[in-house]
Amino acid sequence: MDLVLNSGDTAWMLISTALVILMTIPGLALFYGGLIRRENVLNTIFLSFVAFAIVSILWFIYGYDLAFGHNIYGFIGTLSNPFFNNVVESNALSTYAPTIPEGLYAVFEMTFAAITVALISGAVVERMKFTAWLAFIPVWLTLVYIPVAHWMWGGGWLAQMGALDFAGGTVVHLNCGMAALALVLLMGVRKNTKLLPHHLGYSILGTGLLWFGWFGFNAGSALGATNLAVSAMIVTNSAAAMGMLTWMLMDKLKTGKPTLLGALSGAIAGLACITPAAGYVNFTASLIIGFAGSFFAYYAVSSLKSRLGYDDALDVFGIHGVCGIVGTIGAGIFATTAINSAIKGGLLYGNPAQLGIQLLAILSIGAYSLIMTLIIGKVIDKTIGLRVEEEQEISGLDITLHEESGYRLS
Image 1 (cartoon, helix red, strand yellow):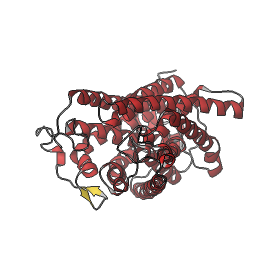
Image 2 (tube, one colour):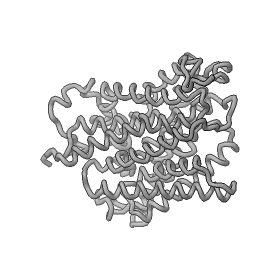
Image 3 (spheres, rainbow, N blue to C red):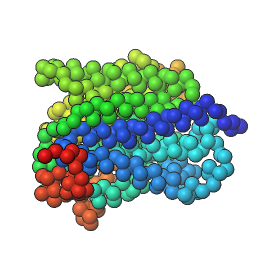
Image 4 (cartoon, rainbow, N blue to C red):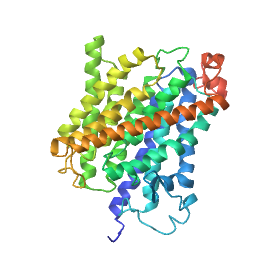
């Protein structure tokens, strides 16, 4: 097949890449920053910013090659162009997206790696050493994210089996959710486990930026300005809306009052659960997936966490991990060739084997991320130490780790 650059596709992918960057900085940073105590707002925001910076560099030194290079036994790619040597200079087009430059595809995929790492930080806010976080980012990126991305998106063994993950239900959401769970199991509970949002205004802005940027995340994963991108945009928005309304309903039924924080959480749940299915399902299916994702995430946040006793501060596992599972199963059930002719369809469209493949992807990626993160976290804990001192945690990490304060109040 002749590779011919399409200026419309290229323009859309440039915009999509910028939108996903906006999701991390400042979107996710503000969303997380508003949800914690004011003494930790700067530290929490900093965790997202520094994750983006480190991944931005390492991705082009070796990450892109290992994730999307020539396949080695289905597990990892070859390191053929370290430091992105001569890729942009050669004017090469991407083999994964043959109408856009390879450099553009690489930077688009970089944004996914960056937000996946940054998402993990929400589980460990208010108690993780900044130096431990700095050590964790490159190691986890290298040993967990890059192999998983290759398995699913880079021609690895799950891709060869036909596993479906349009924009990151397993690679991003399940992956970060299981990693978050592993870290909080290692670190234990905070001294003050109450969720005390000090500034919901930040979280409102963050959610809005995430919702806006998610169109680049999902519709951008069509890799061109096509009808598939339009379909992905529609179902992304509808699932987010359904997720928000579902969480509000659950709040009303349980407590008698819907909350804005719940509405924001439901929107994020809807966005997360439609991500793996966005390019495969129709509008009706998106409503079902959005409802199911928000319903199960609500249960995980409101009941499962307290019953099992883990302290996932901002519910990374409860929302992203759970919704990654729901959405990946949803793709296996509702995927249809009427939306995407490149697939075989799901359970309801004559291909029941797809659901089995989706479950295998969930189990393998979930187990790999959990076990590897436990190992990485344990090594860091034995060397640098994962958790701040008790006095630092009580006083707040902004002052004790950075000698800064988000608010100059007397």
